[in-house]
Image (cartoon, rainbow, N blue to C red):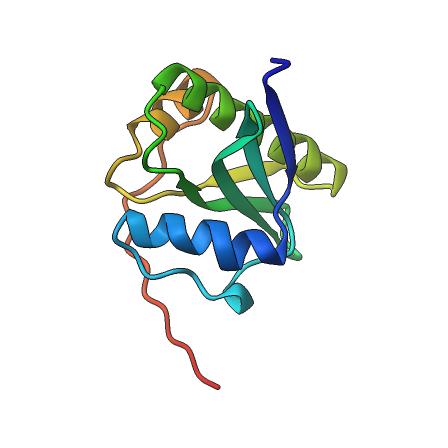
Length: 137
């Protein structure tokens, strides 16, 4: 674990690192105004490899979403450890903010690692959903 470090996502991470990762995976970068202030990036041997954001509202649910990773980083075992780190800090943060549930969502493609780690940690599969987003200025 000494090769790992987790830290808060910064605005610079969003504009430089995460936007690049989203594009590499074939997605449009998520606008910064759409994202919460709470989020983490995991570094392995000082290299950023995965990140996610967590929303909290006036409900008892914390929502962990927008997982994104360095597409060129292929070590599945290391990636799984990084996902566990994000889940752990999200659970601790959500509990500290008085939340009773951690809701995790992610895309259907290229997410077998996240699904596997969540299942191993006691998460139950929810419903199959589709997002629809409307924006205005």
